[in-house]
Length: 238
Image: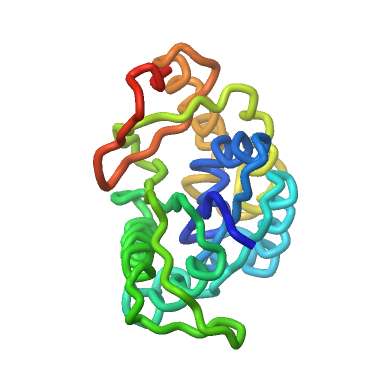
């Protein structure tokens, strides 16, 4: 199965929080979209890896993605090296995405920039035919995504471009709240975390509403780029 878009996140819920609206919109347009989680989020203060496994499956079903896979790298301690790069390369070569969306280049959680660089490096290396990989018993051919974009996470980074996600905020928020163990719950007895406050969950929505306001739409999600964004016509801009 070939994908149009592969969204890669260091932790389950990274993708939903940051580009869930964009994925939901593209899926509604008939695009094939997948999610690759690098870790199970086992170091998370709330819940457990087993709970997040279930929550991530539920979130994937809500969004309607074509596939979701978890590489189960060590949360907090994975590194960007040949071993981890090769595992990501195998997934890229298997699904041949045209576009890869990945973690923020700079962010509060140390796994986010690590995951960002790992995904970006793997996308480049995946296009080198002399790197040999075997996945599920099959020799793989080289494949390099056409574009790599970085979604915005905890820090309010200035986007290089934004995607209008008007009409898809409800779907995004539904996918986010599938992670019941992680986000605001007035009755929860678990310790508070930066993302479990009501302010944090509210901010996920008002950030997107504000980006929408700035471009004259209902809501938008922002991304940063590794190279210039090009359009075929100046009329392509909204």
